[in-house]
Length: 327
Image (tube, rainbow, N blue to C red; front, top):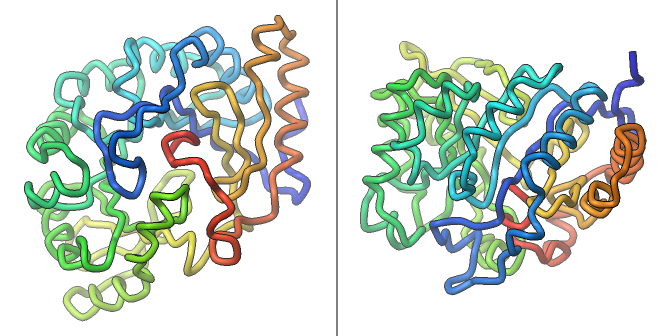
């Protein structure tokens, strides 16, 4: 039995967020600048064999949750094949996907059969024109994807809504009603100053305590729980199955219990979303490292994990966009 993978503060790393591409078919203004084209080129991406090696190494070290992210992961050709390979790895017992759902209608059933059980979908508005303003895309494609995922048997399906003052904060109640109607879980997220676009959007920041208090005037909110490895704090709407999560990296950070690291599409391990600590694995993989050397490198990387982010103290610190890190 190997020693568990822990950082210098004793936090056990059980959760790997795996970006398979930094590309996306939407342009959410808080994530990517308009016209941005400076993506990694495919030769710099880890191929599926390399990804499988890294995930298998994490699994041997006790990391049992993996989430496929991007960019938009479904723009990576062959993603269901990769999902099936990862789902078969010993030790991986929770394989999930974060997506914008624009391509989900045609892939949902194949992804479910490949071994993905849970899906998170980014959806900040239910109004088609507003959706186009925020993302540059078409809302109906996302809604079609959500319904296809539900029909394919994914459970839970979580809706992630970044709440922004003057942009979509007037739709909080509408999103609650939508999720009650369709049996989805809802999670509200505070804006984060990731890159220049994220800092611009932070002017629209809403403390989620405000949203919770607003909802409590309309609904009876009970303590709630949800399985998963993420940081959301949940309540349940009385008389319904709806659970609402609040992800609060700014107002109430959760760094002391952080159990995750992120692997970018180019093979860089990022140890904190709000810091620049990183460790490149691609050079080792392409130099023919052994499994033991790869595991040692992962342990060395995790030792670099900082105590906490500094989004409030140093909002200008992180210059990379969210799509470069992995969601």
